[in-house]
Length: 145
Image (cartoon, rainbow, N blue to C red):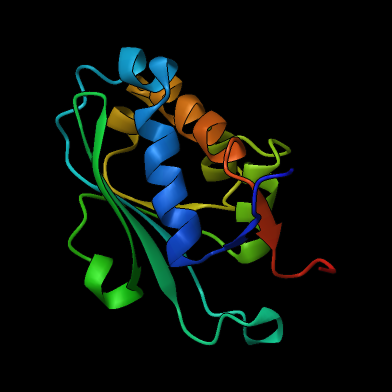
């Protein structure tokens, strides 16, 4: 029996992602000094694939633990100290490990609001967050079911 696929983005996917982050020894180890607050991953509206409004994945991260993971409207995530915004196609590339999050920022495929020096200092944390995301059984909205 295969695990159920969670649509990306959806509340179910985000809940599974939070659990995957907390199950990641790599993330915990790389992030013990992360005290910089929440990270919001913003996806602008993509009506053609069923995302009618901008949404954000809110990750309340602290010292190697994901204290909360929620799917929110974009405006509710604007107070996060770190906001990464990218089109669906780039988030998909990141989740498939075809694009690294830091490379995405440098290539201007991912917009960062927040301190780039802090993000770069925690590159192993960013990589571990991507690794955790790849462990979530994912159904991409722009692919056939």
